[in-house]
Image (cartoon, rainbow, N blue to C red):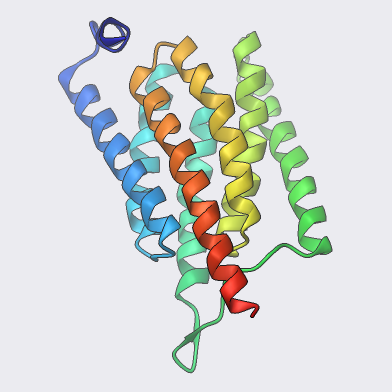
Length: 205
């Protein structure tokens, strides 16, 4: 196991290792803050996604790069949504998606898949078998990020599914630190779902 992580970084510069480790720490911190419904989830998440976008650009994984670029943009939108207040009370509270939001989420999922696939084609990037998994995960995460901005509990369900998909994907690609990061994300997402569910149930009593 140790060799798996070390061998992946034999030809990697110290700067890239430092950047990946920074993204690793800020990413985990961000998910933990999301679990606690703390608005600092967004500035910490921005740092993680911007660094990760750059690293994935260097690695040539366009789908993942676009995904993290989108996370950076959606973090700003989510930050705005979570910071809105009405007479010092939060406007955006934890809730479940209604029928309209479910439909929008499904549409967003398929649009995302189409856009990421189109980017691969337009850039003449060879689409390998693992890239199709990457494209699928992009659709799941895009939708999950939007639901998180609206504080919809279903965001955690999508994060859990997406995380389970990409853990072996990153391990297969030799990105050990990212694989470990998403494994930790999976555990945190399960814990966050349970915590948000408890808050939601208390609010509906």
